[in-house]
Length: 98
Image (cartoon, rainbow, N blue to C red; front, side, top):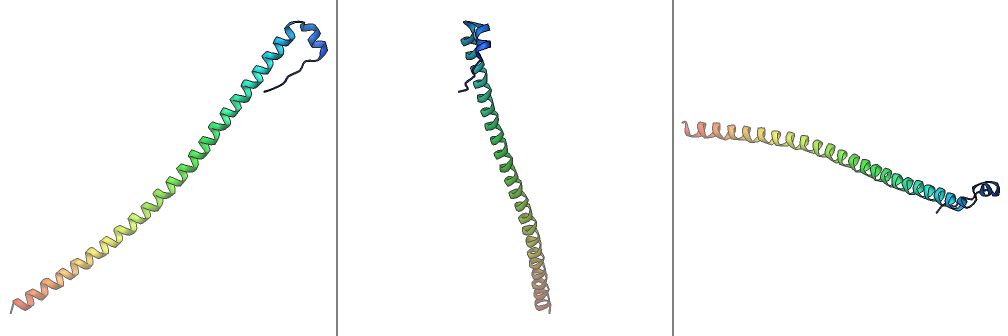
């Protein structure tokens, strides 16, 4: 809670309205403080969310690298399988072709 005090000279000029004026100023100051807390909270949430997105993007990049490596491994083993099949077919043809 904010505390705002008025000098005696101002208090004398305002008369009975001085207390109401001080109350109003304190309410405005409290509202600003609450708004600042809300803004800071939202900013911290946005910062946390940005960190999360950065982490997710890094994970996606890692998965893409893994997929590329896996694709190259699959293609390599497919060629090895095909070559083995061709060797087996030619072997059978040669063996049974006589």
